[in-house]
Length: 92
Image (tube, rainbow, N blue to C red; front, side, top):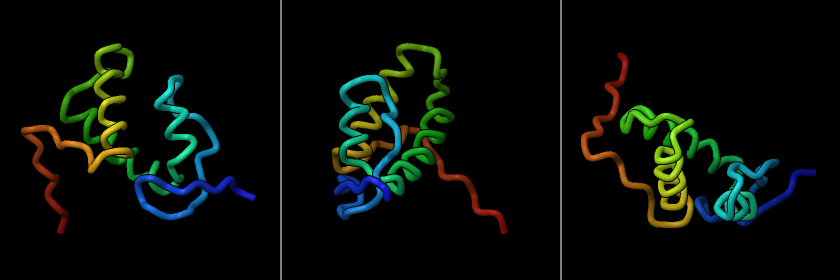
């Protein structure tokens, strides 16, 4: 049976993550209170952040930006979009 959490992002009890996503206190907080469904939403947001800010996962400064964005995404009103962000045009 899946581990259930009261998801901070989605506001309901859902299956929790099976891993701690970051090796720090934020990773533990996410593990304790973020659902798999909310994590999937984060992954899409994460891709957008990586591309728009042109971040490198190996760069410590980039990692700090990602941690800040994750904190906002999961535990605040929502993450800020990059200032020059333009949503991709829909196909069709």
